[in-house]
Image (cartoon, rainbow, N blue to C red; front, top):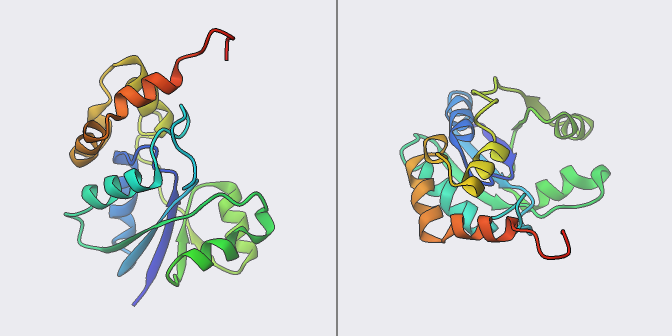
Length: 172
């Protein structure tokens, strides 16, 4: 049995992430999804809590034939010990999946095999684009799985990101 690890902020979990999980499902028997920057929420860059992102991931992957574990991973501002931090918060895994150059470097230095995957429509399927559409009130729903739309509606996510993106009178 082989278990993989895939980390992302998932702010929100979008169709590019789902496509990546489906591709990884061809390689491994189980997958640990690291919910990165788990302590960050209620900002334009990171509007959703770790718990909300776990709901998104869990509901969006219910129909994928792969055992998945969602594990919150808080930021650690010391890259040299980041992999051991991740390993301490996660079930054991055999291979990591990432296209992030820093993440690849850190796992390689720690002796963990890293596999990259093709990006899926990256010009549109990326968190910044989804969040910008939410802020502007334009068509963001086709970029995320339907269960993620439902979670965002349930938690008042659009109102939240629009509110936290407003500037105050001091220009901040």
